Length: 140
Image (cartoon, rainbow, N blue to C red; front, top):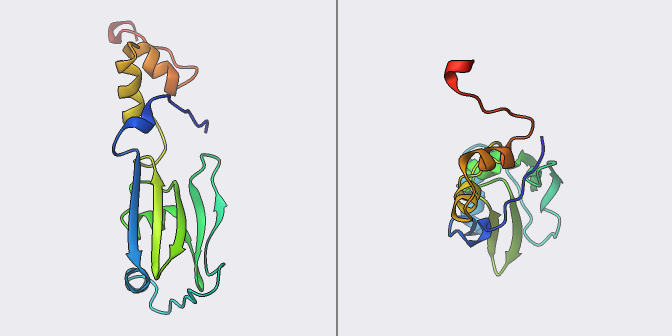
């Protein structure tokens, strides 16, 4: 899989987002799936991103005694993407999220940004998908 950056995406309101929850909320959300969850919030590495995918999304994140996939964390904490960072401060956890979606295929904000730059549909498709050919349906 190749990651495709698109200039102009960062200007969209849904491109960057934050979710901030209290330590108690974090535990309660995790307990819906992991009843035995134990997190020591005083330890720096008890909440930590362990691994990233090639597309810079979180592959594995540690919450105390459990390691979750980035997709699982995205679902549990209602994040817009698995491309996130975590910060802890003042009894709260903040997820800073970049992008919106699963990160596979064509970015809707990226396609919109390219269209606003004057690109046509063929240029937009070739930006996201390499080695594709666009043909008339009658010729296939």
